[in-house]
Amino acid sequence: MTHHIIDEPTAAQVASLFEALSDPTRVRILSALMDGETNVGDLVQRIGLTKSAISHQLRGLKDKRLIRSRKAGRHVYVAIDDDHVTELFQRGLDHALHG
Image 1 (tube, rainbow, N blue to C red):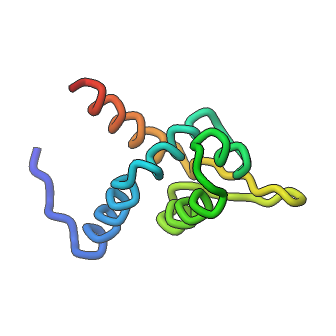
Image 2: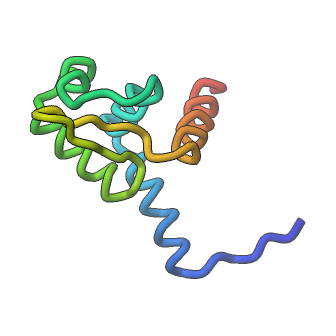
Image 3: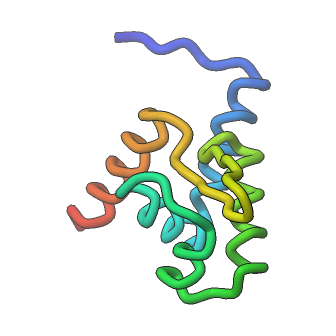
């Protein structure tokens, strides 16, 4: 099977995706979201960082289209954006645990 070399814009998008996954805090946030949608306050408690720190990381994940958010009253809920992200995360975790 021969693969074609991807173009520069596509390569930049893929690199940006992996850049988003290069931070342990962002990876921990994604792991928490593997159970489904949750509100930011719960993430703060589960991850053990300040709301400001979690919000900063969430912005980066949202900018890279790895998560989506919705507001309900005073609460903001976040979830993994699509199955591609879930699959990529799970494959990375499997690879890390395969060791």
